[in-house]
Picture 1: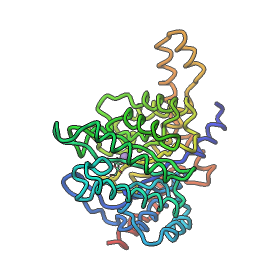
Picture 2: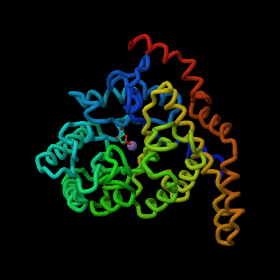
Picture 3: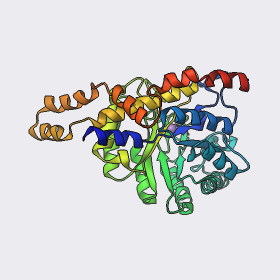
Picture 4: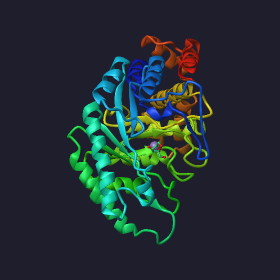
Length: 377
Ligand code: PSV
Ligand code: MN
């Protein structure tokens, strides 16, 4: 691919940031307050607009319901629009109600399943009013002890309730099914891995896809292979970017294993998913150690660098080496792209987009962090 084509792709890259990444958050043990943290969805949109202002590639914000509930969705959509942003994925919250202790869409009690379903319908209504195209489902349902639940009965209830939800989706809407192998349930999770998520998505139909959250796999999982598999099955719905060391750590994407992020992008480019508008590229991080907006800008830069390096891979040479069984040359082909310093390339891309070549420094110099710290506290 020539340099101009690579630059074009980098200019068109889109990454969604999460509303919950701008408000106060914490660990399992405490929520920490940060001076200037967004206090409501309007302030979250203001902060997301800052990330877009300096990176130029984050034009949408994911919302979590009811955390971001408002009375007037049209007004919120306009508010975001005025800041150059769109409302992105709508994330139903089926994990914070007392009734959901033993499950939501899989709960044995039909009344509780109905409550969960009603919340899903409410989210689809919000999608209609905000113009969102993605219903992004993460289900906390699962069991903590052997014998607590009947695996097959729970599976059947999940299939039935998701079928009801699927029927309510408009033609251009998608439901993204996220999986996680543990937490908050520790013995079994109802959608525990990409296989379960994809089985469900296959049963539902073309509007259902699988969402890969990088923090939701057991240690050692080959995520890039899962990504390749999903692309090949036309079931890759999107990402929740973050990074992990041990569990669902929600660390800055690319901070622990940048090579893994590159290898994931290598599969996205190889499979053509990098330019597929139906794949939702989203960050799922909520920082309490780093300043939130800076952490988000840093995450975006890490993703851009991984993508740029993946675009540099000599695919012909790679294929040839693979077919010849030249393992060393195949690996070196990847490493040669990975070791390239793509920062000058991204700097010139940003300049051509009318942006500062150093988004993090430009944001730091802007005084926005000091301003919100004063205004919001
Ligand atoms: C769950 O761990 C998750 O990854 C889901 O995407 C949630 O919606 C998100 O984190 C925020 O809690
Ligand atoms: Mn997630």
